[in-house]
Image 1 (tube, rainbow, N blue to C red):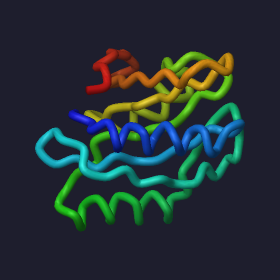
Image 2: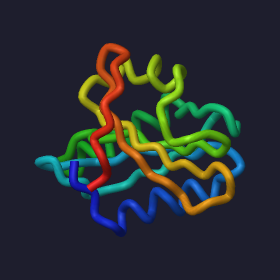
Image 3: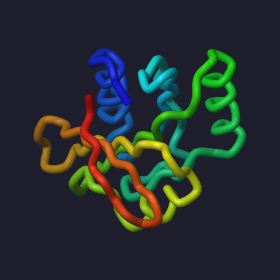
Length: 130
């Protein structure tokens, strides 16, 4: 998935704004190119995990599909750990095959580090952020 710098910056700003809790949201794509970032609320309001309320998730996906796109990525932040999928992330991803997982790492007060992964059958493959 190609992700324009301005869309990536929206994701990073969402992560900064929601810290110390994890942020979360979706990325809409058309033909492998991201066209929209849909911020959602972390219904867990937690620095350790995220969840998107079912109604809000439905509306976010509907927004992407109404614009002629598909769900290309789920994004969230890790405020206290590296931007690598946790076991919770890996388990959650089992319900979303073929979707990238973008993680914004905010640990250690350094500049945000953004990584993207495909998670298939519990196997994690970094795909980079382009």
